[in-house]
Every structure is written in C-alpha cells, then in structure tokens.
Length: 256
Image (tube, rainbow, N blue to C red):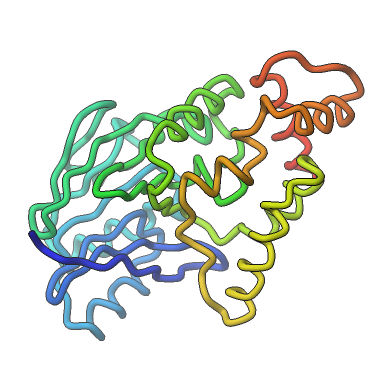
C-alpha cells in the first residue's frame, strides 16, 4: 500500500487546500485558487492526479479550470451544475478510489452549508469542506437547521480518531464563541491553549478529530444542558430539541 502525507496549502486569507501527496504525485481537495497549488507542485516536482470538490463555493472550486489547463485529471464532486469542471459526479454512499495512494473514500452527502455539499471519508480521514469546522459549523447559506443537525450527527458517528480536514482556519474564533455557548467546558480551555500556541507559530490548528469535536463543538453538543441553557437565554425562551438549539446557536454565531 502506498504511503502518503496530507499537506495544508494556504489560499486567500484563511482557506486550506488539502493536498494528499507521496513522492511524485498529488491530489488536491477544494482548490479555490490554482496558484498555491501550481507553485507547490512545481517546487516539490509533483504531478497532479486528481481534484476533489466538496461544494460549489468559489473559494473551494475557483482554481479548477486553471489546474485542468495544466493537468488533465479527473475532478470528483457533487451533482451540482454550478461546478462545471466536475467529471465524476458522486452521490451519497458511492465510493471513489485514489488508486495512486491506495485510498478509497466513501461519499457522504452532508447538506446544510449548501444543498449539495459532500464529504470524502476514508483511511481515517474526513474531508468535510465547510460543514464541520473545529469547534464550529458552516453558515446555513442554502440548507436548514434540520439538515445541518442531521449532517453533523452523521459525521459524529464515525470513529473518534478520524482526522477532520475542514476548509478554513476558524478555530480560535470558533472557540471564543463556543466558550460563550458552552460555559465551563474545560476541554475548550485546553483546546484554546493548544490552538493559540500553533497560531503563534503560524501553524495550522488542523486537522481536528471527531473525538475533539464531540468534546468541544457546541453545534454537535446541542443536547448538553449548558448549551441548551445558553441558546435558550440568547433567544429569550426555553428551547426544546437539538434542532432548535442549533438554529439559535447558528444565528447567535452569525452575529457574535
């Protein structure tokens, strides 16, 4: 079986383009900008073999066309005409393989941030775009609180050790909100200390892992009494049920 690494390439102000690579080849996840990818491939003398897209937003797919002008490779993504470069459209439960790396991914449809958002799950890795963040979740641009709750709940069913590769460096700002939404959670204090040390060294706080998210992410802790109480206080009325709690948390976070 091939051995490989996963490298974070920075794009824009806070995006990560996740790059799966071995000694001679690379696949990229959500290349919003082609330039950092092309620079990295040239510097490391790598050949691009695949592009994976999780959702249609330009900061995740904007580099597709330019990369394809240099490398004729498959582009895997959701059934969404807004990503015209996708050559292999994938639906929930399907599997795709990066044969160069010996990695098979299960496709998981996880709407909420967008209506056609997918994740790639396999080999202990979860590439989840903008649905799940470290200590947070994506804005509900096209989906509903119910969809986001269902998607996050599904992601929480994979093993705790699963590494979470999300699309943005939002960890510290998410933690600040999480501490307001989930007061007294000591795991958040420990995470904040670790994350701040990494950012002080200009290093990514990612990947996270599912176990960390279970312990620190208020959007997956909507049944916890402290989170329910905080969300209820925010909206000024008692909330019943995790979906209503998530909806309140998301509105609160939008204005935090």
